[in-house]
Every structure is written in structure tokens, then in C-alpha cells.
Image 1 (cartoon, rainbow, N blue to C red):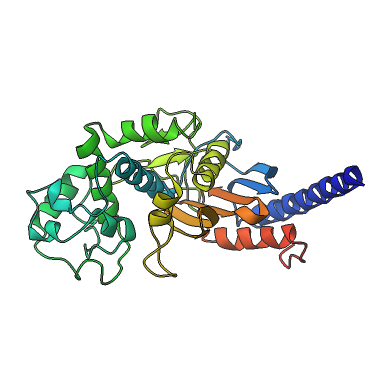
Image 2: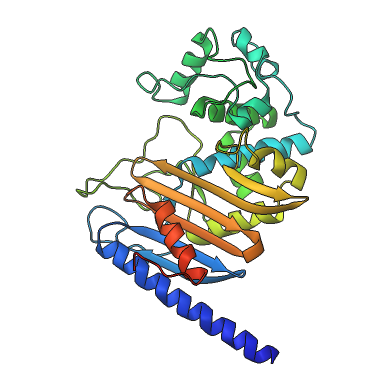
Length: 332
């Protein structure tokens, strides 16, 4: 009986994988998805698929080995890095920013690292008209006179928080943030092909482009952005769920947001006791878009990487989940 049940489950998963592949092919044919996708259900990968082109030339098809910018999901690496250093006693998340950067104005003595992790610092958004590099960013922060609100009283999601988290890591470890990520996070997670701030010389880097197949450059105004392929992204999602770098208490600090509809360092999620129940995070950069969703009770992980942003990664994930749960997919 046990063998029969196992065989039935395997057949059902194969059938669902076929339906998902058919849905994804139709979505691509409709011009609504170009990218890579991985689906795991009951702890097993059932779909790992590359769809479309690696760049705007239309000459290079994607493979599952290609790496993608993952936008704001890359903020998870500085959030985890902060909590790692907190566990090691090298900083405390209640420390104020002024402890590390006393040259900043008095507002720095009001903001804690925890505020940076929760996006409750009161820092305004980056002025992208003047910020084109890390040096520009520092100049803007050094000239900032006041906050938008008292830290801890409200929420404003922006990259000033991310920038300072990365600079604090550099201050404490005395090594560049990119090197810290590669050696202390990616390596520990078993990630072997990750890149931080890729260049035109890096192979197997998917290039983003618009609907007219105009290709974007790789340059971004501030540094520290990790890029992953499907296999490495799956390792990272499992690392979060299994606490391979930081413990459950630290994970709770960066997965539970200031309020339910907001984001923290790991995006959004839920925990019960010492277990991650769900983890959801999306990100975009130029014409890249990415999404990771995990449901540990179902052993389910959905990873979507696109290099031709259509703004529909949640819809694709929802349609995929409907198939996995045995519901009719209206889009298929």
C-alpha cells in the first residue's frame, strides 16, 4: 500500500508539472514572461525551466544556469549579515547609527539598527537625481538635517536604510560589503555561482530588456546587489527556512515586519515557535523582476526570475499554486 501511495503521488506531481509547464509556455507565447522559474512541492523540485532569451539580441536562449538581478530580495543578505554580527556580539541591533558614524547629524543618534531593518528609521528616500554612486550617497546623508518622522513611530520603505546597513557591516568587519557577502554568507549557504554587482565581463548573466527589446546596462547607483541563478536561489530559500546562518530568534527579527502589510529585512513572512511557516519577497531592478515564496508546511517553494519585467510575478505564482493545489487554472 505504501509503495502504491508513493507511486500515485509521484504520478500526480508529474501531471502537475506538465500542467505548469504548459501554462508557462502559453504565458511566454503571449509575451507575458521571459525568464527562469523553479517550483518545489513536498520538498522536491518538480519544475526547473528557462523560457525565452538571455539578452535583447534574441540570439542567446536562457538556460537555468543564468544569473539574474533579484532587486530588493538582495537586501536579505545585508539583513542576515547584520543579524549574524549581532549573534557574534560584534554589534547589537539596538545600537544607534551614530555609534558607527559619529560624523552624521544628530538624527543618527535617534536611529537604531533595528529601525534600519524594519524601515522605521524616518530616513527620507534617496534623491536619485543627485545620487549616482556610493560617494554621492554619503554626501547626501552627511548633508541631511532631519528625519521625516520619529524613528519607530511609522514606516517608509527606501534604500537609505539598506545603504546604512551595508556600511555598518563594512565598519564592523573592516572588509568591503561585497566580499563579506561572498565569504560569510553565500559560501556558508553553499551558493557557488552568486555574483555581487556583476559587470559586462561576467558570463551567464542574464541581461534585462524592455518590450521593444532595448537592453539595459548593468550599472546601478549604489553597490551591494547579489545576483543568483535558480539552484543557488533555492539553496538560499532553504537556508532561511532551515536557519543555516542565523538562528530562529534572529530570523524572527527580520521576517516579521513593523505591521502586517509592510516589509522587513527578509520581506514578509510568518513563524510559529522556532519554525518559518512562510517567506515572501519580491524585487525589481530596471527590467528585472524576481519573487520567492515558501510555504514550509507544504514543502513548497516558488522562485521566479524575469529579465523582461511584466509586473506579473505574483499572478504567475498564484496560477502555479492553483495547479499544485488541484484547482482549475483559469489562465490555462
